[in-house]
Length: 188
Image 1: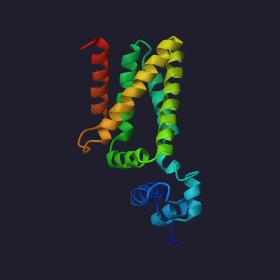
Image 2: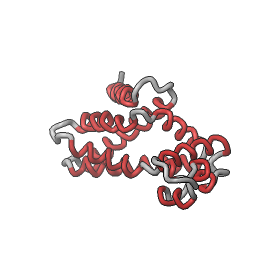
Image 3: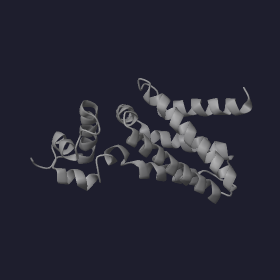
């Protein structure tokens, strides 16, 4: 290995995505990812517990962002409006990440184990949102329902966003998806 170069985590992410696309997730090893990134396997394991974590390493920070953002919204906001504001704010975390998100989603959709992991991640975000809604005084059923609706809007909006060329921000797709949900519930 050569001298230290910055952004090891980003280089590992990029190398992993390239290899997952070229060889498939199952056929790619952590050693191959590290080699492609110009790093040692030891460096890989300093950043990620396993090769799946390259795709899911930001899950905890995303969950925290959802919960913290929702907690910061004034309690006078209606639950669905608080959820909308949370989605809008969290969408900013994905600015300039469209291509990575698109490639990541393609790898996940091609592997059952990774799709399951993605659903677990989303369920964890939903649980954190529901807990935050309960702490804001919402009843347990209403908190769960609002969190589930918000998670569904995020998932559907995100999928729509990664299927597009990337010239529009994620927030646009989340707003449109929430509007679709409101139209469905209003019987339009």
